[in-house]
Amino acid sequence: MKLQDFCDMKKFEEIMSNWAHSTGLATVAVGDDGEYISDCYNFTDFCIKLTRGSTEGRKRCEKNDREGEGVYPCHAGLVDFGIPITLDDGTVLGSVIGGQVLPENPDEEKFRQTARELGIDEEEYIRALHEVNVKTKTEIDASARLLGDVINMFVRASYATMQNQKLVVEMKEGICKAAEQIVVANDNTRQIEGFSKRQKILALNASIEAARAGESGKGFSVVADEVQKLAQGMAHTSVQIKQALEEVTDTIMALNSAE
Image (cartoon, rainbow, N blue to C red; front, side, top):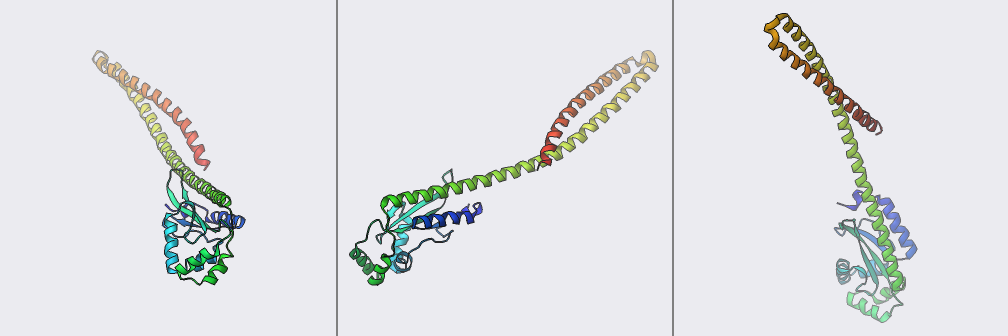
């Protein structure tokens, strides 16, 4: 299952964008396959163009992406975060990752050393470094948790809405099917009523013929009485079934028309 299957991605992007603009931190959402599923917000040249732009830097960054959880320091000296996107049952759909900020004013010499290790021009690296926002550890932690909480609430609410819509569709289909079955049941009840009426007529005719036969028709008269009792019982049962069906029919048809 992919998050895009049930989430309003326009709303999702609005949440990401508003958070990035209000905090000054970088962020992007990725699916469970690691591919981007949102735009990239506040990405810095220091991280994307220079650090990830070098072969060794990219290798180290990808290792951080795989292993980093919560708020953590990246190999280049900045602070990043990774917050899983999950459903209530624990299913992981992806994550929001980002950060790309400094926890304090930088020690330039350390970053020059990193530039040399990664094969990046030192002066260009330091210039890009000075464009990176500085946030306290408390601010970074709070911002990352806020984004994770809001995104997860939105995703879970979207998933619940999809499940509810599916349930409504199934209920409507069930009601339609029940309405069809009720029509058939009513037809069958009318057939039972017809059988009962014909049995009453047959029983009456049999009683008349038994009376005409006199003494020799007594045995047949007993059978005719039993048939008449059976017809009466069938008629009584038919009335009860009809009354019950009428009540169910009214309910089902009302639900069906309410769709």
